Length: 154
Image 1: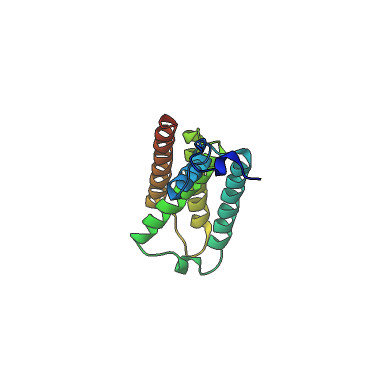
Image 2 (image 1 turned 60 degrees about the vertical axis):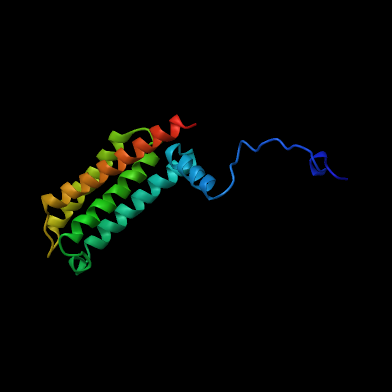
């Protein structure tokens, strides 16, 4: 039996809950990141932990220094990776707390440099720590600005 909305000239109620198109998909993704639900928060925390363990383990292996790009590309790598750690920590902390996310990324960077100083063939470098912190600060500033802008548009 046909529904009233199937008849010509019938008006449909606008779909307010789910906008359509690629723009809507980006908005839903952004909303999920900026206002993370509990499963995403747990997942982000576990992913961050797994990546850190993998980085520490791989960095302690013989020949690990051959995998690291030469300056200045290594600083860019530090910037991006630690921005990613700060992003994952920001999500894990609920998308509202920038300081814990920044401290997590900085602590990982300091621990990484400390472990590098103990590994044969590797050295610790303060410019790596500076790039780590710069990436983390950039990530939390961008995420905070996105959240404020997104919340204003809601």
